[in-house]
Length: 122
Image (cartoon, rainbow, N blue to C red; front, side, top):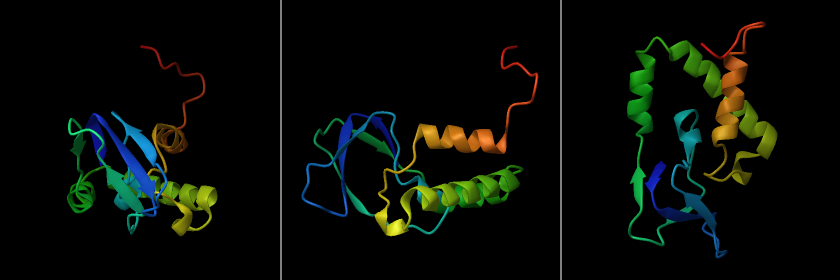
């Protein structure tokens, strides 16, 4: 899920606490793209002006399976799941909010390390 507009709140394991804010540009539940996953919490909308974009994991997999990126995406999935286990121990301890830009950037650099002596500028 991608929050494209507004703000939402995520409550881990359907608890009674206040919840964690989810802001425009954030995403959640990425693990469902890379492994079997059961949602661990509840997403609520404090403002009716929020918009969420849903990416179907099933359709995503069908597209990726026929793509030239299949091999790379399989490697990314393995790295992602390994990182989940390293940082969370047991999957039951992980919320749907785990991950984010820092994780994606780190894993992408593992898949595509910068070339020595190369510049990122044109």
